[in-house]
Image (cartoon, rainbow, N blue to C red; front, side):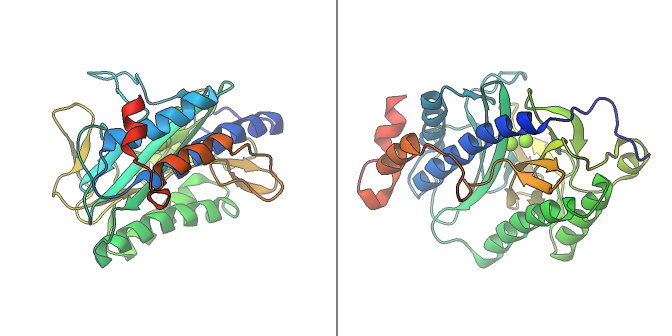
Length: 295
Ligand code: MG
Ligand code: MG
């Protein structure tokens, strides 16, 4: 079926410009968090950096309070090593060789942005770096393909092949999503092709569509399981996983990455970001714990 499933909201150029503001806020929060990532920091301290950025922008952290058996308690999902997604920030200290996935989103002036990166902590094994490169690579591939394909299934098929060709597996239990006024809207955006997608869940890549594209890639099995905290998803075999995500809009000129860095000539007030960076960056010699303990 070529037509779009259910009700997919298509956004006007004016609405996309507002979503770009939310996307820039998410990008900036990630820059501050990335600067804080190092051996010894706790995942709660990283979350506090992102939470402070959103708070100072008067943006609403989207993840906090998401319903579940227990409401999600933080602004950021922080998932380490074999944790795939939905890890809860806490007292865990990152150590050299870890990889840490930071996934966060905010609502600014009524519009949402959502993005994720997986960072190395210090020096990591080459095979783990390759996992990060392939996962980032398959997100970049998807965005490139959105410029030339007409249906999502054509993108998803190539995403699945790309990951398999590199010897890794695509997580199937979790997928991307439409995004706009709410973080999770129609359609579902899988990173692989399935009979169900082809039969009834495929959708057109048309101007005004906005989706969060978020491949999760595992070194071993694609299977995941839920930890006792009701949130954290881990790989069933304990091998590492990576996750990258951008919020991407379709326009008449092709895909527009709404969570990308500010472009030349684009308006972006970086005062709050610069202040946070000056406090979390080790190069400046300041104690990152000061950020964590303020919240
Ligand atoms: Mg996300
Ligand atoms: Mg998402």
